[in-house]
Length: 490
Image (cartoon, rainbow, N blue to C red):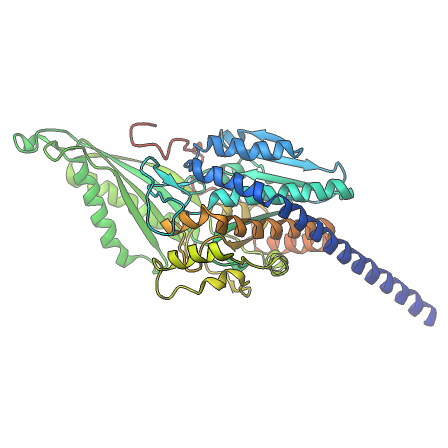
């Protein structure tokens, strides 16, 4: 028994020593990676700001995707462009050629239409621009590329087994680019996927999101002179307005977590012409994808009723459909630990002055600007709320974890001019670097610690329903490459 005990003790000491050695090596790797990213922070800031200037909307991000692909190709990645039938989508990979996990990193780069703002803490639109990076995807894409390159260089230097793979994912804003990439099987062999998002704070919470389905409803009527022969006309705009009215009445009779929003994208050109064409664009959201489908079907019924009541014709096109995020606590804990190591965003005097001026346009309840330097405690809230993201469909295909970094002045909402403004400055760049380091550090942990990978995959498997089969909410439609173009221009 004593001999066995001694052997067991020696084995345990050996395992402990290897674990300590692996931890020390990982920490040393993180220090080198942080230094590498810091040395290129100015360059990555310039790349991000070029994409801020481009401000290209979903599926039309030609210059943005080319610039990011250039960074990766120059760093030695193998690029597959135009994947999943999407010209602006790509996959960039680098492998050591040995056995090891495949770590994916997501990168977004589409802007939002209908919002512009200069790099100014006061409201200043840019007249010639039709879109702006109000969700910070110029930072998202560049920061993820920085993380992937730093991880690749460390793997190459050390001979670390595995593969780092950067996914260039277009049209997150309502286009569901990632869904088509999931549907194409591009994530089938990946072990873990990492992502991040610009924000007004630093956190790696465990949280879900709202499932979401959208469609454009198009009404066709008969044009005529609105005063001289109104009886001959059948107003397509009447169809849209009747539909909207019925949907607004329906709001009382849907689950309280439901979110429904719409915008009339075409309603006619002149008051004295009965419009023979009109279009309204709808989003339906709920934490449960099944509920989204059920509520969406009711919205379709209102459109059919509106067409019948106005003697017009109606057709609709599903634009996108996405699931709710499937959380992964194992990954979030690892990301949170690395985010704490990296730390938050510290403003210099010029940035502080910018933030204080911009803060005057934020709610009085906005946190102090010093909050950008803090790392928030990890909160577990698995009930979907807030917005939606096509990262969700990736999370149902592979264990996925993410974080957010303070690229905006604390208290700033996404999809706002304040987000565009701060994201166009060094405030945004600094938050991006926080994210790049955190993702790269987590990639190191995953590549050097098989137990972490297995824990994340085991949790993913446990969360999947029995007999799970992925069925995209958007069906089998091809990517809507022209969904951001004006009606009639597609």
